[in-house]
Amino acid sequence: MSLNTTPAADRIHISFFGVRNAGKSSLVNALTGQNMSVVSPVPGTTTDPVRKTMELLPIGPVVILDTPGLDDEGDLGEMRVRKAADMLNQTDLAVMVRSGMEEIHPLEKEWMQQLTERGIPYLEVISKTDLLPQIPRDTNKVIHVSSKTGYGIHTLKETLGKFAAIPKPEKQIIADLLAPGDVVVLVMPIDESAPKGRLILPQVQTLREILDGHFTAIVCQPEEIPQVLENSRKRPALVVTDSQAFGTVSKHVPEEIPLTSFSILFARYRGDLETLTVNANRLAELRDGDRVLISEGCTHHRQCQDIGTVKIPKWIEQFSGAKPEYVFSSGGTFPEDLSEYRLIVHCGGCMINEREMQSRIHRAGEAGVPIINYGIAIAHMHGILKRSLSPFPEIRELLKS
Image (tube, rainbow, N blue to C red; front, side):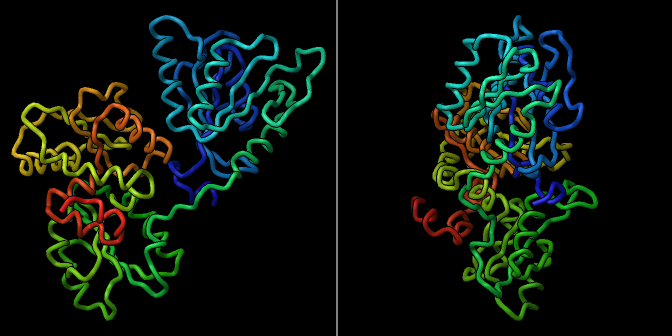
């Protein structure tokens, strides 16, 4: 896939870690061929993670993350180190940069151990080798480079490419649910919260996968469903709707036609459909004053009928009969301490990568806090969760009758 056709959340995320003045930013600039990060001899120049989406050959489309020094000091320094630690949650491949002029730092050992425990592949890169009297030999996991002379940069690229080329199980949004010749109806509401002139990413990715698989897509709005079904010569193999239109769409789609939502498709594609489904019953257990975290992976302008801050809280209160207290998070922000929440309701996660979504689900599990997905929550509160899981019989069987 090219840079222009691969969404940022589906690109390999390569993060550069190290103590201050280890040469991280200089290495990132040398590797990318751009002045991506500000470089100076002053320790702590990189104060926030720097993110760059680009094509890095021979890997292809990637997201490069340059992080603050792991040994930063003071109150601000501690905040910067926490920011660097947050980057672990979205790192597919790590580069631990060490200065060739210094002995290994205890923090460098600690972070490499943490990368191993998290199952994140990493390379140890020794920088500033132009200052060494003799450059040691590279190994499978240790590369020697000089950002100043360019020594070892090509080798580093090639080695990163080999790590990135390790095959992963191929995941599909919808194609594996379809057979040749199938017709899919995609219901995409265009209302005041829809971005003008654009479709949201899950819709675009789902539609593209249908077209790539040479299936047929019919796209409409909720009120057009009866006419579409009446005029369709072939019964649709599947209807996929925006979750907030579940109530309307389910009334018009016959029971024999499988129905699901973009959010539920992404619960499987990006997250853990089983975990996000079995917690649906916890919605009915909410009581007045319970703290509910409603979290989104993207940052967008809130409209008057925003799904996360308006519609879902309204549906929760109608369904549970309770008046919970809501906390909202968006973008890269996800609370460190989850113990205060009774429930987490998360979006489909189309704008964050799989590792970040999996990390959030895992952290919720460690804190003993049930987490559910927007689409699953909405379907459950409209009484159609089992039906919305019809494409996934193995998950459907997990639900209580």
